[in-house]
Length: 406
Image (tube, rainbow, N blue to C red):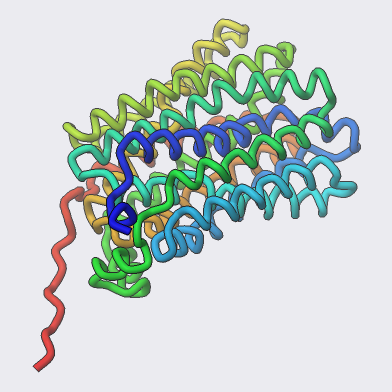
């Protein structure tokens, strides 16, 4: 019984959390590879595919708030298991969908709900509660780097599965792979969460939400994260088709997405490590400015395999480096009692941006025959995100002491 009250070890939390994020984020990162095979065989428009993935991002964001609440209250284990099962069902349904509507429900709603329960908000809640504050930013960077490694590892695997077995069978294979999250979730069963979590809360859920949304820095972080979602979702889903339209082979797109994942490993780790020593808001501003400049240079340069690989490497370094910094600031300001839920609200803003980035990419391509407008919008939003992160206050919020009973 005594062992149940002991906190989880650092190695256990990082290994299990990192492997879960590797699977969940790695699989979703390759969804852009399915755009052309599915739309060409099914006779659907790119907008139909894009709308389903846009719904996925929105579903992920909305349900992520409630997944965070449940993880804070009941522990991450149950949420992770439910998310893994939904992920498998969604991938299988994605393979067997006969119409765009069913595809939107499976690839969109179900997989979005699954990602809400198997990615950063839930894992970072465990890290926040189980890892000492002085190592928290570093640990969040390690978990984010694991998701990046998953992108590097899984995108070529998904490309080979599609080429070797066809897109239907490839999705069914991934449905089986994602169930590996279930045994990994046992390593994140938090000790006596039902008592410990409630005992350390001085606020109800409604009080915590109200406090956060009245705090300007929280709103600014949400605005910046909106831009992050817009940029990454658009590039991740539409870059393979953009490169095909420019006459490059599908292998170039696969290798480009893999490079994003590889360099993301280093970028997120470096961001998490620097966040422990430097002002996180300044690091976030630098990341968003750098993204805008990188996209502008990519569009101005001739499109060749080499320019694509350089762009993918630089963007990869900047890709998820915002995640440990943004989550770290939320933890610094509000504490960890409601971290998964508040992280879920911030991530909802990210996913609203993702919805618009994916959907606008497909809509404007079908309307104009080009992705140009969305690329330039991504540049302008990057500058905006850099500016709104600079005035963020990172210090702990000052709360009035609770009134004592007479």
